[in-house]
Amino acid sequence: MAPEVVCIASWNVDLIAQIGSPLLRGQTQLASTLERLPGGKGSNAAVAAARQGARVGLVARIGGDDFGQMGLDLWAREGIDSAHVRRAQGEVNGTALILVYPDGDNSIAIYPGAGSRLDAEQVEQARSMMASARLVMASCEVPLAATQAAFALARAHGVRTLLNPAPAAALPDALWPLIDVLTPNEGELHQLAGSERTDQAAAALLARGVGALVVTLGDRGCRLYRAGHAPVTVAGHAVQVVDTIGAGDTFTGALAAALTRQEDWPQALASANAAAALSTQGRGAVAAMPTLEQVRRWRSGAV
Image 1 (spheres, rainbow, N blue to C red):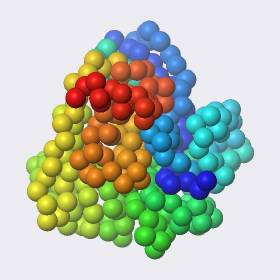
Image 2: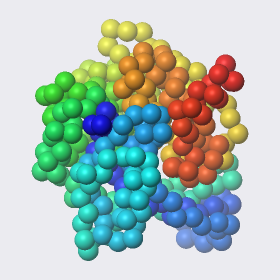
Image 3: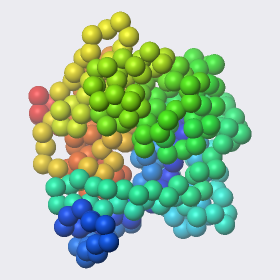
């Protein structure tokens, strides 16, 4: 069956080291563990959406090395349509270097590699897949020209769009009104709006044409802003955190899946909060992402 959710996706391999404290400039520490795991905000969100029951397709550009093959193998296992994934032989794959601290927080450096050349032409080749979808999503890890082309195509066919603006970057003026749902955390919201006052920053982004703004607040949940509506806060979950890698991507993918199921806003946000909270109780991004059944069981026991 055709994908319901199409992700304009970044794909990285995560190299994750556990260390005792954040590095100081010039400092060297011994890591206690080193792992090589699948990552990339786009791929992560796509996997999260698939595990939450959505049929998912990708538009992506990956390297020709074994890291690229790792992505193809992952998407096959998760039942994700990779027909529009282009493999660039001879190019280095995207890679993320992640340092994880004892409290579960992390710092990340990303090299986009082959994904940095994803373009509007490749997006156009996936027109039929996007035109028949219910939602097209992206993050700022892929070139903004590709995202803008995809969102314009989605808008022309009445398909909802969702952007996770991470890592935060200045967006072109023409992209703002093409965004139906924007999912920044508080830091990204403030950076995008140029304001440290959350409500004021949210109003500024809505004034640029964003349809709905969902600000993620960690274990405090999230807050929904829409023009003409009072803000709505949906409570989060206090859990024992192992690490926070991929929690934001899990939230984004789970929200995409919930909206595709046509859940109303409070229900969709509660589903996304629960999926993100569960993801922090395991290590890495993909390995810790829950299924829809796990989220429903956990919510029924937690409520």
